[in-house]
Image (tube, rainbow, N blue to C red; front, side, top):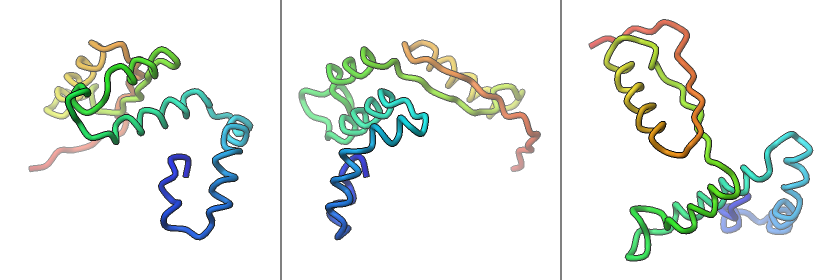
Length: 118
C-alpha cells in the first residue's frame, strides 16, 4: 500500500490516499522506525528500475549511497552457520561476504536440530 501498487486493483482510491498521508504517524505510534521504513521504500523503488547504462548492476549507486547516509543498512541473518555440515559452511560463507560490506549484520543461529537427507 505504501508503494502505490494497489491503486490499479481496488476501488478504494480515497482510502489509499489517506493511508499514504497517515502512515508515518500510525507506524511511529506502533513503534516502527520510520526512517527505516522510508529507506526500505526507497530501496524498493530503486531496485525496481531496470538496469541500464546509468546503473551499477540492478541499482543506481548514487541513490543507494543516499539511503546508507540517511540510515545504515542492517541485515538479520538466520542460518545454520553453527552446524558442521554443508549448509553450515554455506551460511558461514554468506556471513563472511556480508561482513566485507558496510552493512550491519545480526547473525542468529539455528537452535533446533535438523537433519539433512539425500
